[in-house]
Image (cartoon, rainbow over all chains, first blue to last red; front, side, top):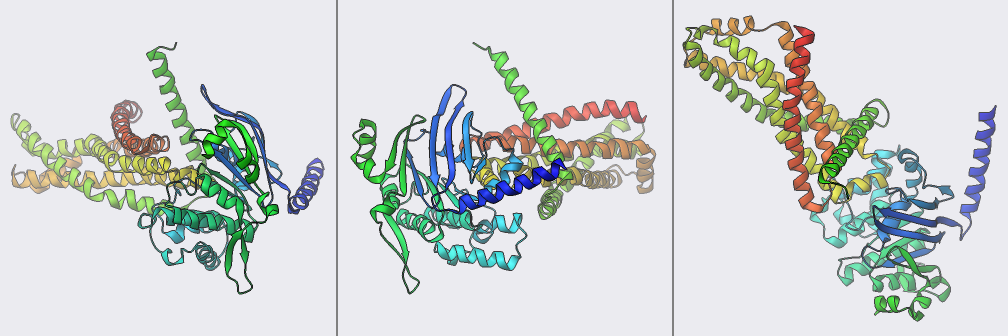
Length: 289
Length: 258
């Protein structure tokens, strides 16, 4: 009887959560006073921020400031020492690895160097989760893989091994792999670091397209200011003929991209692109110059 | 300030703890879903068929070498005719299992440690987790099952080839009659030698080689230099553990079976 009541309550709370998180601007990811230290070294101190549905959070900071660590905490690859993390209304900081698998179904993580499986082809990499961890028919998986590879302009490379791809191509395949299972939140860890400006622009355009055309909420970790501002100040639109154009974002759209700057594990700035440009903080000024 | 010995003991205890945790998680992965069947079949092929050449060559030359050496020693007692007893017993009870295990440590242990180590340092293991796959079930369990099952098979092949190599030397160099050699091999063995010493040991050795290599590979850090170090550690640790386990298994099996 008690079990039945609990199941009913869970079903009701799931239904309410589904309604809340279907609303535009719902808080899909909350980082609440999170802290982490490795032995004596403090990586994150009391870090808090919220990602709203369809918005972009750009985490800036020097190397070792705790940016990538934040993404690993969100995906449960690392556990925080203190604080609370919510993803799609579910508290994830206390979940076991097994429980975390369900949360990860809605999180796509693009690693610094792509982290493609080097023994698998581009097709197998992109479709990995669908081939291995879902019951989707193979023909449907193949179709989805070709669709996302087409989206990032990599369909011609579908049967290549990752070792045969350039750095930029590997990042685009990594983006395709992360979006193949249609997660609602994408986390980019230095997606453009080490790329030439033209390739970086291509990757930035993919990030913008995913956000504006697919409704994906994103967290972008980078120390490439040029790329950060580009993503924050541009938007993607689909023309009547189906072509996608990247244009200058409206000021309202610009405000949907919020910057967070980390310094030695602490948040030293939070605000939109305009506020970041106008800040007088000497550290941020030195970072911007 | 902690002393060197204290730090060493702490790190040794941590390694043992993490090894046990990995083995327990892998055992759980063997008996619960999801099970990655095609990875198990692939690993059976990689570890089994892939190691066949090295095992055949090692077994053959070991059998031939000990036959030639034993022939000389037995001549001192006029007992050349019973060379088959010595070769059969040595190959099946000791040399077959231990040398096969050491060869597999070099070929399989190093390969697993290098593969998992490079996956670790290039974030591929984290990528697996982020994509909802448990790396222990996907990577460790298939290798553990394959190592556990294929090491005894390879050992039996190595034993047979070694004894056959012994026959070649005893027939053409020592001039021992073929029938005499093979009956001598059979007479020199107890049934316990075959199923106890000959078959129990390889199961244990296979388990040690693969689990140690997986443990070392999954704890790799420090870039490509770390991968190289992990490979060396896996081979050295597995080799020492195989030889140590051989001694203790001998003691246990001698007490239980004879």
